Every structure is written in C-alpha cells, then in structure tokens.
Image 1 (cartoon, rainbow, N blue to C red):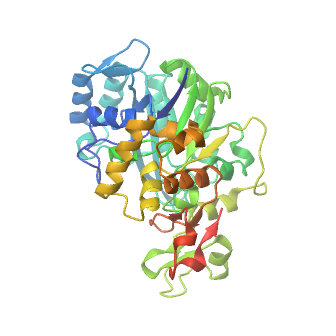
Image 2: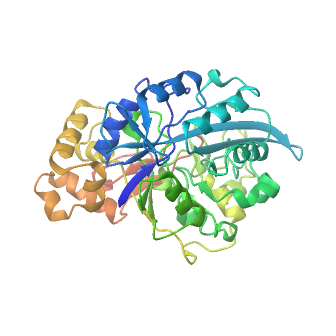
Image 3: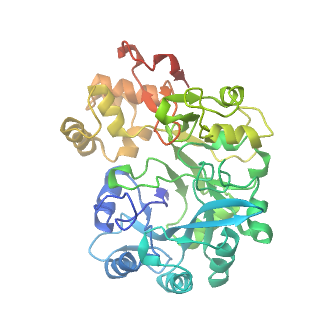
Length: 416
C-alpha cells in the first residue's frame, strides 16, 4: 500500500515547541494532512515516554496506534539526540534521529542514556560523547534500530554542517559507517543538491518535517509503497529500495532557514560566490557570515548542478496548503481567514496531500477558488519566486510575483 510517513517531530517537552504536540493532536492533524505513519519523537523524555506507553498500543509489527483511536494513523518510535563534543581539535555538534522497534528496546536505550545525561532536561537530550559512540551503543542494544544523521547540512548541529560538521560519513562514524544507511536532508537542502556528491550515492535520502507544532507536520515527508510494518520500512530504507520508497516530499530548499549564506542582523543574503568575494565577512559590520547549506554542498560536491545519479529516489517540491491559501488571499498564514478556508478545502477535497499531489485541475476547480487553483498549479510547475533563507531566517516564497509592487527585496528574488 502507498502511504506517507513523517518520522521526525518533537513533543511538547522539547524547547520552543507547541503545547499541542501530543499524540492525539498529532493524529488529528495527520489525518488532515494525509499522513499514515508518524514518528513519536522524544521517546527519551521520561514524562513523554510514560504518556506514549499509556496512550499507544503495539500492533505486533513494530508500529503502534492510539488505544482510543483507529488505525488510520500509526506511530513509529523515534527520538532525536544531540551530541556535543570535540574531535580532531574541532567542536562537533551532531543531531541524530533514532528509530526503535519496540517499547522494550526503548526502555533499554533510555536506561543506558539515563546513566550518561539528564533525559528530563529536554525532549532532545544533550550528551558529551561522540555520535559514533551513540551509534554503537544503540546498535548494540538492537540491530533493528536505525541511526540517521538529522538535517545533515544545517550549519550548527549536523554531520556536514559548516560550523561543526565533518567532510564525510566515515570521518564521523569510522568503522560504524557501514551501519549508516540514510541521512535526513533537512529543509534547506533537497535530494537534487545531495545528488551532486557521489559519496552519498548509496545513502538513502529521507525528508521529514522536524515539526514543533501540529500544523507543520508533513512539510517534508516520505512516500512508501510497502506494508505498514517496522521491519519492512526499515529494510526499504537500508536497501534504498525504489520499489518501496517511492519519493520524498520537499520544501523548496530556498525557503529553508539556512539555504544561503548571510547575516540576518544586517539583512545580508549572499550566494556562495558572493561570500567568497567578501572573505566570508559581512560587508556592513565585518562579522563572520553564517555559511549556509548551498555553500557547504558546493564545497563537497564533485558533480555539476542537475546531475541525476542512477537509482536516485525522486522528489516532489510542495508548498504547504495554508501558505498557498494565505498568499492567494493576501493575508497572513495564521489568520482566521486562512484557517477557515483551509478547513473548508480539506472537508471538500480530502487530505492536504491529496489536494496538492493527486487531484486534477478540473477536480480542484469544482471547489477551489481561481486564485488558490492558480497557486497550486504554479507550485506543481515549480514556477516559484523565493528570497532565499539565510542565517536562521526562513526564505520568502512568492507564487504571485506580479502582485508585488515596491518590494524592497525584489532585486533578490530568484525564479526557480
């Protein structure tokens, strides 16, 4: 069966996260989005794990469902861990996504990690040992676990990040490297960017929302065609099986917070070549620029843009329906007008992913306004203008550039 999975999200026990991030709310929003499988997130946190045990029941296949709920939304046990340490004379900050096949395995993981740090301090706990040691520890507990470097390119907390990362998987994980089968590309990169580096050809590229609030679920996700079963999903990821992992759903990476280089405080947005021309310094205040994901990909790439390797898993770039509605109505995303129209569209047309991916223009025209329909069509054709994200600021996406007049950022708009 074909289904959509979003493996990486956080609970209300993580910093800067909505109080609505509870499994019941997650299930409700997953149905709106058209997501069949959600990561639980944060299984290391004591209080949240107790909630998971009290609210979810195992299905006998490594997945879980709400005790008081149907099976249309299932869960897979996941957590993100932060390792901050020094290696080869450089500070490293690596975030890792962990998949586990059962509550019992999670109990053992939590027991081990609880002896090495304070699990209750945050939904994403911090440890001072290496990412390699973490991977070895988890895989020694259960070979069925998956270890996936999270948002692999972001500057501050990732395996390839400009500020604290490595130049290869092997440099980070050593002899454990053969057990690293996948990476998460993150919001600021997409598979097309990763295809430029031949070292990743055997690595499965996954995309997840890293959601901190329920309406952010599915902003990136993965489409599978296999049984809803932990081991079959894990095997599809390990083997990079294109028959079972059909495609990933992507942000336009330019919209991600770290796509381009820059200095947010001074309003400076630079391409990699501009950064080099300015000796990596902000031309206004002369402080060091934050080097973004595109720049880092350029440093490690050994192929030109638009290169497609053999056996590449396709990707589809989407804009969340709420954002399309907001731009069509020319109002903010969080406004009542957008919420009301979003709910009407979902009630009439089915889950969000069906509207964005599958519904024909003729079908959409029967219940979608002309402006929203035009926005969906332009998104599908990738006719999108974006001021790239930089230094922690999301990019500004624009489906209707002809409506904009006197925008101070218009000179930096790029058509992708």
